[in-house]
Length: 510
Image 1 (cartoon, rainbow, N blue to C red):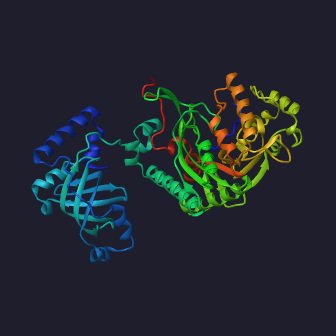
Image 2: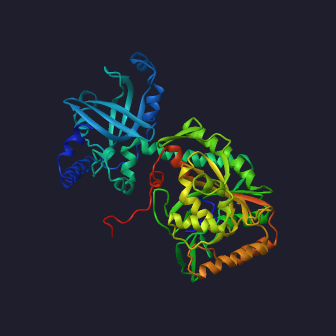
Image 3: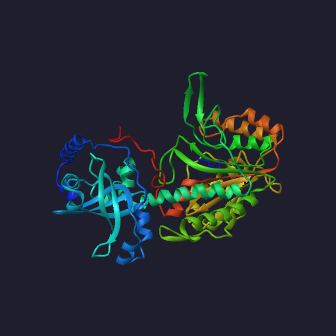
Protein backbone atom coordinates (compact mmCIF):
# COMPACT_ATOMS: atom_id res chain seq x y z
CA UNK A 1 0.00 0.00 0.00
CA UNK A 2 1.41 3.36 -0.99
CA UNK A 3 2.27 5.58 1.94
CA UNK A 4 -0.16 8.46 1.53
CA UNK A 5 -0.55 11.76 3.29
CA UNK A 6 -2.87 11.59 6.28
CA UNK A 7 -2.29 13.16 9.66
CA UNK A 8 -2.37 10.03 11.82
CA UNK A 9 -0.31 8.83 11.93
CA UNK A 10 -10.19 -13.57 47.82
CA UNK A 11 -11.54 -15.34 50.68
CA UNK A 12 -14.65 -17.03 51.95
CA UNK A 13 -17.32 -16.24 49.37
CA UNK A 14 -14.87 -16.23 46.47
CA UNK A 15 -13.06 -19.41 47.48
CA UNK A 16 -16.23 -21.47 47.84
CA UNK A 17 -17.45 -20.24 44.45
CA UNK A 18 -14.36 -21.41 42.60
CA UNK A 19 -15.13 -25.09 43.09
CA UNK A 20 -18.66 -24.84 41.66
CA UNK A 21 -19.73 -24.71 38.01
CA UNK A 22 -20.65 -21.20 36.98
CA UNK A 23 -24.33 -21.96 36.48
CA UNK A 24 -24.54 -23.29 40.03
CA UNK A 25 -22.65 -20.29 41.37
CA UNK A 26 -25.11 -17.98 39.64
CA UNK A 27 -28.07 -19.94 41.01
CA UNK A 28 -26.68 -19.62 44.56
CA UNK A 29 -26.18 -15.88 44.11
CA UNK A 30 -29.70 -15.44 42.72
CA UNK A 31 -31.04 -17.19 45.81
CA UNK A 32 -29.09 -14.75 48.00
CA UNK A 33 -30.53 -11.87 45.97
CA UNK A 34 -34.05 -13.10 46.75
CA UNK A 35 -33.12 -13.01 50.43
CA UNK A 36 -31.98 -9.40 50.00
CA UNK A 37 -35.25 -8.56 48.27
CA UNK A 38 -37.16 -10.07 51.16
CA UNK A 39 -35.32 -7.75 53.53
CA UNK A 40 -35.97 -4.76 51.27
CA UNK A 41 -32.22 -4.44 50.71
CA UNK A 42 -31.94 -5.08 46.95
CA UNK A 43 -30.48 -2.27 44.80
CA UNK A 44 -31.15 0.79 46.99
CA UNK A 45 -30.25 4.23 45.65
CA UNK A 46 -30.16 6.38 48.77
CA UNK A 47 -26.66 5.65 50.08
CA UNK A 48 -23.99 8.34 49.67
CA UNK A 49 -20.32 7.76 50.61
CA UNK A 50 -18.35 10.71 51.92
CA UNK A 51 -14.80 9.33 51.59
CA UNK A 52 -12.72 7.18 49.25
CA UNK A 53 -10.92 3.96 50.18
CA UNK A 54 -7.69 4.86 48.40
CA UNK A 55 -7.84 8.44 49.61
CA UNK A 56 -7.97 7.29 53.25
CA UNK A 57 -5.20 4.75 52.65
CA UNK A 58 -2.93 7.51 51.34
CA UNK A 59 -3.92 10.04 54.00
CA UNK A 60 -3.13 7.67 56.89
CA UNK A 61 -0.22 5.80 55.29
CA UNK A 62 2.49 7.29 57.51
CA UNK A 63 0.62 7.09 60.84
CA UNK A 64 1.07 4.32 63.38
CA UNK A 65 -1.84 2.71 65.24
CA UNK A 66 -2.04 5.44 67.88
CA UNK A 67 -1.84 8.18 65.25
CA UNK A 68 -4.59 6.60 63.17
CA UNK A 69 -7.04 6.34 66.04
CA UNK A 70 -6.35 9.86 67.27
CA UNK A 71 -6.81 11.41 63.80
CA UNK A 72 -9.62 9.23 62.46
CA UNK A 73 -13.07 10.63 62.01
CA UNK A 74 -16.19 8.77 61.05
CA UNK A 75 -16.32 7.81 57.37
CA UNK A 76 -18.96 6.45 55.02
CA UNK A 77 -17.44 4.21 52.35
CA UNK A 78 -18.88 2.30 49.40
CA UNK A 79 -17.12 -0.22 47.22
CA UNK A 80 -17.00 -3.60 45.57
CA UNK A 81 -16.09 -6.61 47.70
CA UNK A 82 -12.87 -8.24 46.50
CA UNK A 83 -12.34 -10.71 49.35
CA UNK A 84 -14.21 -12.09 52.38
CA UNK A 85 -12.54 -13.83 55.32
CA UNK A 86 -14.87 -15.05 58.05
CA UNK A 87 -13.79 -16.00 61.60
CA UNK A 88 -17.02 -16.95 63.32
CA UNK A 89 -18.32 -13.77 64.90
CA UNK A 90 -15.97 -11.44 63.00
CA UNK A 91 -15.32 -10.97 59.30
CA UNK A 92 -12.68 -9.08 57.34
CA UNK A 93 -13.58 -7.75 53.91
CA UNK A 94 -11.52 -5.98 51.28
CA UNK A 95 -13.46 -3.45 49.24
CA UNK A 96 -12.44 -1.31 46.28
CA UNK A 97 -13.74 1.98 44.90
CA UNK A 98 -12.39 4.21 42.14
CA UNK A 99 -9.70 5.63 44.43
CA UNK A 100 -8.28 2.33 45.71
CA UNK A 101 -8.88 -0.45 48.22
CA UNK A 102 -9.32 -0.71 51.98
CA UNK A 103 -9.97 -3.43 54.54
CA UNK A 104 -13.19 -3.53 56.58
CA UNK A 105 -13.72 -5.21 59.94
CA UNK A 106 -17.24 -6.38 60.73
CA UNK A 107 -18.22 -7.87 64.11
CA UNK A 108 -21.51 -9.52 65.06
CA UNK A 109 -21.46 -7.80 68.43
CA UNK A 110 -21.31 -4.37 66.76
CA UNK A 111 -23.71 -4.90 63.86
CA UNK A 112 -26.24 -7.30 65.37
CA UNK A 113 -27.39 -10.74 64.23
CA UNK A 114 -29.59 -9.56 61.35
CA UNK A 115 -27.00 -7.39 59.59
CA UNK A 116 -24.08 -9.70 60.35
CA UNK A 117 -25.87 -12.65 58.76
CA UNK A 118 -25.79 -10.70 55.48
CA UNK A 119 -22.10 -9.89 55.90
CA UNK A 120 -21.22 -13.55 56.40
CA UNK A 121 -22.91 -14.51 53.13
CA UNK A 122 -21.39 -11.79 50.92
CA UNK A 123 -19.66 -12.82 47.69
CA UNK A 124 -16.75 -11.28 45.86
CA UNK A 125 -18.20 -8.73 43.48
CA UNK A 126 -21.01 -7.50 45.74
CA UNK A 127 -21.15 -3.75 46.36
CA UNK A 128 -21.59 -2.61 49.96
CA UNK A 129 -21.65 0.49 52.12
CA UNK A 130 -19.93 0.73 55.50
CA UNK A 131 -19.61 3.48 58.10
CA UNK A 132 -17.16 3.69 60.98
CA UNK A 133 -13.73 4.81 62.17
CA UNK A 134 -10.22 3.70 61.26
CA UNK A 135 -7.69 1.62 63.18
CA UNK A 136 -4.67 -0.55 62.48
CA UNK A 137 -4.82 -4.31 63.00
CA UNK A 138 -2.14 -6.24 64.83
CA UNK A 139 -0.46 -6.83 61.46
CA UNK A 140 -0.49 -3.08 60.79
CA UNK A 141 -3.17 -2.95 58.08
CA UNK A 142 -5.33 0.15 57.95
CA UNK A 143 -8.94 -0.97 58.53
CA UNK A 144 -12.40 0.55 58.90
CA UNK A 145 -14.30 -0.75 61.94
CA UNK A 146 -17.87 -1.16 60.69
CA UNK A 147 -20.36 0.52 63.00
CA UNK A 148 -23.04 0.46 60.32
CA UNK A 149 -23.19 -1.78 57.26
CA UNK A 150 -25.49 -1.95 54.25
CA UNK A 151 -25.57 -4.22 51.18
CA UNK A 152 -26.11 -2.12 48.03
CA UNK A 153 -25.77 -4.34 44.93
CA UNK A 154 -25.76 -8.12 44.62
CA UNK A 155 -23.31 -9.37 41.97
CA UNK A 156 -25.00 -12.30 40.27
CA UNK A 157 -22.00 -13.32 38.21
CA UNK A 158 -18.78 -14.28 40.03
CA UNK A 159 -15.50 -12.51 39.37
CA UNK A 160 -12.87 -14.73 37.71
CA UNK A 161 -10.32 -16.08 40.14
CA UNK A 162 -7.39 -16.25 37.73
CA UNK A 163 -8.00 -13.17 35.57
CA UNK A 164 -4.42 -11.92 35.96
CA UNK A 165 -3.05 -15.09 34.41
CA UNK A 166 -5.56 -15.24 31.59
CA UNK A 167 -3.71 -15.88 28.33
CA UNK A 168 -6.68 -15.18 26.06
CA UNK A 169 -6.55 -11.38 26.23
CA UNK A 170 -9.52 -11.14 23.87
CA UNK A 171 -11.71 -12.29 26.76
CA UNK A 172 -10.44 -9.35 28.77
CA UNK A 173 -11.12 -6.95 25.89
CA UNK A 174 -14.64 -8.33 25.41
CA UNK A 175 -15.43 -8.02 29.11
CA UNK A 176 -13.51 -4.82 29.78
CA UNK A 177 -15.80 -4.06 32.72
CA UNK A 178 -14.49 -7.16 34.51
CA UNK A 179 -10.92 -6.41 33.41
CA UNK A 180 -11.20 -2.98 35.04
CA UNK A 181 -12.67 -4.42 38.24
CA UNK A 182 -9.87 -6.87 38.89
CA UNK A 183 -6.78 -5.33 37.25
CA UNK A 184 -5.36 -2.19 38.85
CA UNK A 185 -2.78 -1.75 36.09
CA UNK A 186 -5.53 -1.60 33.47
CA UNK A 187 -7.30 1.17 35.38
CA UNK A 188 -3.98 3.00 35.67
CA UNK A 189 -3.47 2.79 31.89
CA UNK A 190 -6.75 4.51 31.18
CA UNK A 191 -6.12 7.16 33.82
CA UNK A 192 -2.85 7.85 32.01
CA UNK A 193 -4.75 8.08 28.74
CA UNK A 194 -7.05 10.68 30.27
CA UNK A 195 -3.95 12.62 31.39
CA UNK A 196 -2.58 12.59 27.84
CA UNK A 197 -5.83 13.91 26.36
CA UNK A 198 -6.22 16.60 29.04
CA UNK A 199 -2.56 17.53 28.64
CA UNK A 200 -2.91 18.00 24.88
CA UNK A 201 -5.94 20.24 25.37
CA UNK A 202 -4.15 22.34 27.94
CA UNK A 203 -0.91 22.57 25.94
CA UNK A 204 -2.63 23.75 22.75
CA UNK A 205 -5.12 25.98 24.56
CA UNK A 206 -2.30 27.80 26.34
CA UNK A 207 -0.80 28.58 22.92
CA UNK A 208 -3.91 30.14 21.49
CA UNK A 209 -5.41 27.17 19.66
CA UNK A 210 -9.21 27.06 19.55
CA UNK A 211 -10.81 23.64 20.09
CA UNK A 212 -13.47 22.94 17.46
CA UNK A 213 -15.70 20.11 16.27
CA UNK A 214 -16.07 19.00 12.67
CA UNK A 215 -18.50 16.51 11.06
CA UNK A 216 -18.09 12.81 11.69
CA UNK A 217 -20.49 12.01 8.84
CA UNK A 218 -19.29 13.60 5.63
CA UNK A 219 -20.61 13.70 2.05
CA UNK A 220 -17.09 12.98 0.77
CA UNK A 221 -14.31 11.01 2.42
CA UNK A 222 -11.25 13.24 2.51
CA UNK A 223 -8.20 14.36 4.41
CA UNK A 224 -6.43 11.00 4.28
CA UNK A 225 -5.73 8.13 1.94
CA UNK A 226 -7.91 5.46 3.49
CA UNK A 227 -10.89 3.25 2.73
CA UNK A 228 -13.96 4.76 4.46
CA UNK A 229 -16.99 3.26 6.12
CA UNK A 230 -20.18 4.06 4.20
CA UNK A 231 -23.59 4.73 5.74
CA UNK A 232 -26.87 6.09 4.41
CA UNK A 233 -28.87 9.10 5.53
CA UNK A 234 -32.53 8.21 5.02
CA UNK A 235 -34.05 11.68 5.30
CA UNK A 236 -31.62 13.18 2.79
CA UNK A 237 -31.55 10.00 0.68
CA UNK A 238 -27.77 10.14 0.35
CA UNK A 239 -24.75 8.06 1.24
CA UNK A 240 -22.37 9.50 3.83
CA UNK A 241 -18.90 8.50 4.96
CA UNK A 242 -17.61 8.21 8.50
CA UNK A 243 -14.68 10.58 8.51
CA UNK A 244 -11.22 9.21 7.84
CA UNK A 245 -9.74 12.55 8.97
CA UNK A 246 -10.99 16.06 9.91
CA UNK A 247 -8.26 17.76 7.88
CA UNK A 248 -10.22 19.42 5.09
CA UNK A 249 -12.79 20.86 7.49
CA UNK A 250 -10.16 22.22 9.86
CA UNK A 251 -8.43 23.95 6.96
CA UNK A 252 -11.75 25.47 5.92
CA UNK A 253 -11.72 27.10 9.36
CA UNK A 254 -8.27 28.52 8.68
CA UNK A 255 -9.74 30.05 5.50
CA UNK A 256 -12.57 31.44 7.63
CA UNK A 257 -10.19 33.34 9.89
CA UNK A 258 -9.51 31.05 12.85
CA UNK A 259 -5.72 31.07 12.67
CA UNK A 260 -5.07 28.31 15.22
CA UNK A 261 -7.50 25.40 15.58
CA UNK A 262 -7.38 21.86 16.90
CA UNK A 263 -9.68 18.89 17.34
CA UNK A 264 -9.39 15.77 19.44
CA UNK A 265 -11.30 13.53 17.11
CA UNK A 266 -12.44 9.99 16.41
CA UNK A 267 -11.59 8.73 12.94
CA UNK A 268 -12.85 5.61 11.17
CA UNK A 269 -10.97 3.63 8.55
CA UNK A 270 -12.31 0.45 6.98
CA UNK A 271 -9.00 -1.37 7.19
CA UNK A 272 -7.38 -4.32 8.93
CA UNK A 273 -6.83 -4.75 12.66
CA UNK A 274 -3.38 -5.23 14.15
CA UNK A 275 -1.37 -4.40 17.26
CA UNK A 276 -1.01 -0.87 15.84
CA UNK A 277 -4.36 -0.45 14.06
CA UNK A 278 -7.99 -0.24 15.14
CA UNK A 279 -10.79 0.75 12.72
CA UNK A 280 -11.86 3.49 15.16
CA UNK A 281 -9.08 5.57 16.64
CA UNK A 282 -8.31 8.95 18.22
CA UNK A 283 -6.24 11.77 16.75
CA UNK A 284 -5.21 15.19 17.92
CA UNK A 285 -5.13 17.31 14.78
CA UNK A 286 -4.11 20.99 14.79
CA UNK A 287 -3.43 23.77 12.29
CA UNK A 288 -1.58 27.06 12.57
CA UNK A 289 -1.62 29.90 10.06
CA UNK A 290 1.68 31.59 9.18
CA UNK A 291 3.71 28.57 10.25
CA UNK A 292 5.87 26.02 8.48
CA UNK A 293 6.26 22.32 9.13
CA UNK A 294 9.57 22.98 10.92
CA UNK A 295 7.67 25.10 13.47
CA UNK A 296 5.40 22.17 14.24
CA UNK A 297 8.36 19.82 14.68
CA UNK A 298 9.62 22.08 17.47
CA UNK A 299 6.13 22.35 18.97
CA UNK A 300 5.78 18.55 18.90
CA UNK A 301 9.07 18.04 20.72
CA UNK A 302 7.94 20.41 23.44
CA UNK A 303 4.47 18.84 23.72
CA UNK A 304 5.61 15.22 23.93
CA UNK A 305 8.33 15.98 26.47
CA UNK A 306 5.77 17.75 28.64
CA UNK A 307 3.25 14.91 28.33
CA UNK A 308 5.88 12.32 29.22
CA UNK A 309 6.77 14.23 32.38
CA UNK A 310 3.12 14.62 33.38
CA UNK A 311 2.23 10.96 32.85
CA UNK A 312 5.40 9.20 34.00
CA UNK A 313 7.32 11.81 35.96
CA UNK A 314 10.25 11.65 33.54
CA UNK A 315 11.08 12.27 29.89
CA UNK A 316 12.84 8.90 29.71
CA UNK A 317 10.16 6.22 29.40
CA UNK A 318 10.46 2.43 29.39
CA UNK A 319 8.78 0.85 26.38
CA UNK A 320 9.26 -2.88 26.01
CA UNK A 321 12.98 -3.67 26.10
CA UNK A 322 14.16 -0.10 25.50
CA UNK A 323 14.01 3.32 27.08
CA UNK A 324 12.77 6.16 24.90
CA UNK A 325 13.97 9.70 25.54
CA UNK A 326 11.23 12.24 24.85
CA UNK A 327 13.32 15.30 25.71
CA UNK A 328 14.32 17.34 22.63
CA UNK A 329 16.06 17.64 20.30
CA UNK A 330 14.83 14.72 18.17
CA UNK A 331 16.86 13.29 15.34
CA UNK A 332 15.99 14.59 11.87
CA UNK A 333 16.74 12.86 8.59
CA UNK A 334 15.29 12.54 5.11
CA UNK A 335 13.53 9.41 3.96
CA UNK A 336 16.34 8.78 1.47
CA UNK A 337 18.92 9.05 4.25
CA UNK A 338 16.97 6.58 6.39
CA UNK A 339 16.73 4.10 3.49
CA UNK A 340 20.45 4.47 2.83
CA UNK A 341 21.27 3.84 6.49
CA UNK A 342 19.45 0.50 6.40
CA UNK A 343 20.08 -0.72 2.86
CA UNK A 344 22.83 -1.07 0.26
CA UNK A 345 22.00 2.28 -1.37
CA UNK A 346 23.65 5.63 -0.80
CA UNK A 347 21.43 8.67 -0.08
CA UNK A 348 21.89 9.77 -3.70
CA UNK A 349 21.03 6.33 -5.06
CA UNK A 350 17.90 6.26 -2.87
CA UNK A 351 16.61 9.15 -5.00
CA UNK A 352 17.25 7.35 -8.29
CA UNK A 353 14.01 5.72 -9.54
CA UNK A 354 15.98 3.02 -11.38
CA UNK A 355 17.92 2.01 -8.26
CA UNK A 356 14.68 2.01 -6.26
CA UNK A 357 13.11 -0.40 -8.76
CA UNK A 358 16.12 -2.69 -8.47
CA UNK A 359 16.09 -2.60 -4.67
CA UNK A 360 12.35 -3.26 -4.58
CA UNK A 361 12.94 -6.36 -6.70
CA UNK A 362 15.74 -7.55 -4.41
CA UNK A 363 13.45 -7.09 -1.40
CA UNK A 364 10.59 -8.94 -3.08
CA UNK A 365 8.20 -6.03 -2.74
CA UNK A 366 4.97 -6.46 -4.68
CA UNK A 367 3.82 -2.96 -5.52
CA UNK A 368 2.28 -0.92 -8.26
CA UNK A 369 4.15 2.21 -7.18
CA UNK A 370 6.48 3.80 -9.69
CA UNK A 371 9.34 6.27 -9.62
CA UNK A 372 9.97 8.09 -6.37
CA UNK A 373 6.67 6.76 -5.03
CA UNK A 374 8.65 3.57 -4.36
CA UNK A 375 10.75 5.37 -1.77
CA UNK A 376 8.12 5.36 1.05
CA UNK A 377 7.36 1.67 0.51
CA UNK A 378 11.04 0.76 0.68
CA UNK A 379 11.40 2.99 3.74
CA UNK A 380 8.60 1.09 5.49
CA UNK A 381 10.24 -2.21 4.60
CA UNK A 382 13.87 -1.54 5.51
CA UNK A 383 14.07 1.43 7.89
CA UNK A 384 10.90 2.06 9.86
CA UNK A 385 11.32 -0.63 12.53
CA UNK A 386 14.83 0.62 13.36
CA UNK A 387 13.68 4.14 14.27
CA UNK A 388 13.14 3.54 17.98
CA UNK A 389 14.20 6.90 19.43
CA UNK A 390 12.11 9.90 18.30
CA UNK A 391 13.06 10.72 14.72
CA UNK A 392 11.55 13.20 12.26
CA UNK A 393 11.54 11.82 8.71
CA UNK A 394 11.28 14.43 5.93
CA UNK A 395 11.69 14.39 2.15
CA UNK A 396 8.39 12.78 1.07
CA UNK A 397 7.67 12.45 -2.67
CA UNK A 398 4.84 14.63 -3.94
CA UNK A 399 3.08 11.54 -5.39
CA UNK A 400 2.21 10.28 -1.90
CA UNK A 401 1.43 13.67 -0.37
CA UNK A 402 -1.58 15.15 -2.21
CA UNK A 403 -2.37 17.76 0.45
CA UNK A 404 1.16 19.00 1.25
CA UNK A 405 3.02 22.01 -0.16
CA UNK A 406 5.76 21.37 -2.69
CA UNK A 407 9.30 22.07 -1.56
CA UNK A 408 10.58 25.29 -3.10
CA UNK A 409 14.05 23.91 -3.83
CA UNK A 410 13.01 20.50 -5.15
CA UNK A 411 9.37 20.26 -6.32
CA UNK A 412 9.63 16.46 -6.53
CA UNK A 413 9.17 16.53 -2.76
CA UNK A 414 6.90 18.23 -0.25
CA UNK A 415 7.46 20.02 3.06
CA UNK A 416 6.32 17.16 5.24
CA UNK A 417 7.47 15.12 8.21
CA UNK A 418 6.52 11.96 10.03
CA UNK A 419 7.57 11.42 13.62
CA UNK A 420 8.74 7.85 14.19
CA UNK A 421 9.02 6.46 17.73
CA UNK A 422 9.40 2.84 18.71
CA UNK A 423 9.48 1.83 15.05
CA UNK A 424 6.04 3.29 14.29
CA UNK A 425 4.52 6.52 12.99
CA UNK A 426 3.25 8.68 15.85
CA UNK A 427 2.65 11.99 14.09
CA UNK A 428 2.40 13.36 10.57
CA UNK A 429 2.58 17.02 9.62
CA UNK A 430 3.29 19.32 6.71
CA UNK A 431 3.17 22.78 5.30
CA UNK A 432 -0.27 22.86 3.75
CA UNK A 433 -0.93 23.18 0.05
CA UNK A 434 -2.85 26.44 -0.38
CA UNK A 435 -2.54 26.82 -4.16
CA UNK A 436 -6.06 25.92 -5.40
CA UNK A 437 -4.94 25.08 -8.93
CA UNK A 438 -2.18 22.77 -7.72
CA UNK A 439 -4.65 21.19 -5.29
CA UNK A 440 -7.21 20.57 -8.00
CA UNK A 441 -4.58 18.91 -10.17
CA UNK A 442 -3.53 16.60 -7.37
CA UNK A 443 -7.13 15.72 -6.61
CA UNK A 444 -7.65 14.82 -10.25
CA UNK A 445 -4.63 12.53 -10.12
CA UNK A 446 -6.17 10.88 -7.05
CA UNK A 447 -9.45 10.47 -8.97
CA UNK A 448 -7.53 8.74 -11.75
CA UNK A 449 -6.04 6.32 -9.24
CA UNK A 450 -9.44 5.71 -7.74
CA UNK A 451 -10.87 4.87 -11.16
CA UNK A 452 -8.02 2.38 -11.57
CA UNK A 453 -9.09 0.58 -8.39
CA UNK A 454 -7.28 2.36 -5.55
CA UNK A 455 -9.97 2.42 -2.83
CA UNK A 456 -7.79 4.60 -0.62
CA UNK A 457 -7.30 7.42 -3.13
CA UNK A 458 -8.86 10.81 -2.41
CA UNK A 459 -12.16 11.92 -3.82
CA UNK A 460 -12.42 15.27 -5.63
CA UNK A 461 -13.69 17.80 -3.09
CA UNK A 462 -14.82 20.76 -5.18
CA UNK A 463 -16.04 22.72 -2.15
CA UNK A 464 -12.60 22.47 -0.53
CA UNK A 465 -10.92 23.73 -3.70
CA UNK A 466 -13.44 26.58 -3.75
CA UNK A 467 -12.51 27.39 -0.14
CA UNK A 468 -8.85 27.63 -1.17
CA UNK A 469 -9.88 30.00 -3.96
CA UNK A 470 -11.02 32.44 -1.28
CA UNK A 471 -7.46 32.30 0.04
CA UNK A 472 -5.93 30.23 2.82
CA UNK A 473 -2.97 31.79 4.65
CA UNK A 474 0.34 29.92 4.61
CA UNK A 475 -0.41 27.17 7.13
CA UNK A 476 1.14 24.13 8.77
CA UNK A 477 -0.89 21.24 10.17
CA UNK A 478 -0.25 18.05 12.08
CA UNK A 479 -1.99 14.99 13.43
CA UNK A 480 -0.78 12.97 16.43
CA UNK A 481 -2.03 9.44 17.00
CA UNK A 482 -3.30 9.53 20.58
CA UNK A 483 -3.66 5.76 20.91
CA UNK A 484 -0.10 5.05 19.78
CA UNK A 485 1.29 7.80 22.00
CA UNK A 486 -0.52 6.33 25.00
CA UNK A 487 0.88 2.91 24.10
CA UNK A 488 4.39 4.34 24.38
CA UNK A 489 3.79 6.24 27.61
CA UNK A 490 2.14 3.27 29.36
CA UNK A 491 4.37 0.52 27.90
CA UNK A 492 1.36 -1.18 26.30
CA UNK A 493 2.19 -3.69 23.54
CA UNK A 494 -1.14 -3.49 21.66
CA UNK A 495 -3.47 -0.66 20.67
CA UNK A 496 -6.30 -2.72 22.15
CA UNK A 497 -4.67 -2.26 25.57
CA UNK A 498 -5.28 1.50 25.40
CA UNK A 499 -8.78 1.53 23.85
CA UNK A 500 -11.50 0.76 26.36
CA UNK A 501 -13.71 -1.11 23.90
CA UNK A 502 -11.61 -2.20 20.89
CA UNK A 503 -13.16 -3.77 17.82
CA UNK A 504 -13.16 -7.58 17.88
CA UNK A 505 -14.59 -10.34 15.78
CA UNK A 506 -17.94 -11.62 17.10
CA UNK A 507 -17.54 -14.22 19.82
CA UNK A 508 -17.33 -17.64 18.24
CA UNK A 509 -15.90 -16.21 15.00
CA UNK A 510 -19.29 -15.64 13.35
